[in-house]
Length: 213
Image 1 (cartoon, rainbow, N blue to C red):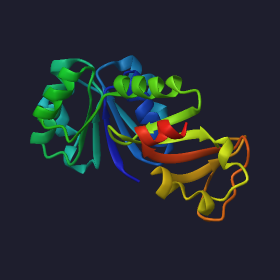
Image 2: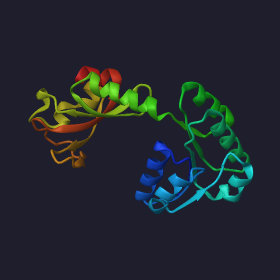
Image 3: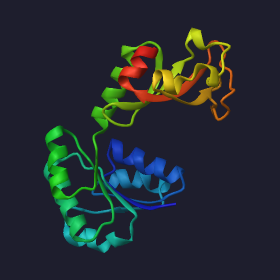
């Protein structure tokens, strides 16, 4: 369990705060919008109203006590000011949301430890999924590597993982299988036999996955 501060209760910030809470984290959500805080206060550990572009308001939160601080402010200048204040107050880990590539670059210059660009990440994932009808889901790990959900290739049906030797021959790793109910089970046995119409979770480079699918 982590102690987390989320600054900004907009569309991204509120969903992030709620999901972090569901995963067992202690979450403080802050925003200057009283209506948003009133609506969300019962869904997080604690919530406060205030202008957190002000150094004194951030200082009062005890910034050094949080494991992670997420800056989910869309306004360019305000987010930079908050990141700068947080680093001067001794924040352990500042993760900031960017709304453009320029914003991303300046957040890095301001001292953000990590930067999230959700619109770009979502667009990339959607483009990959809808560019190949054999890919059902996708998680980007790097510019080249990713984790993919695909249907078992016809040539794999009835054959075992060790027989196919996909890691050596195709350069990919088979991680898990996914049944029709959406239950994911790790594939640990090299003698695991693939079945027709089964979905599998695999990891590999874009080129290797493209060849396979």
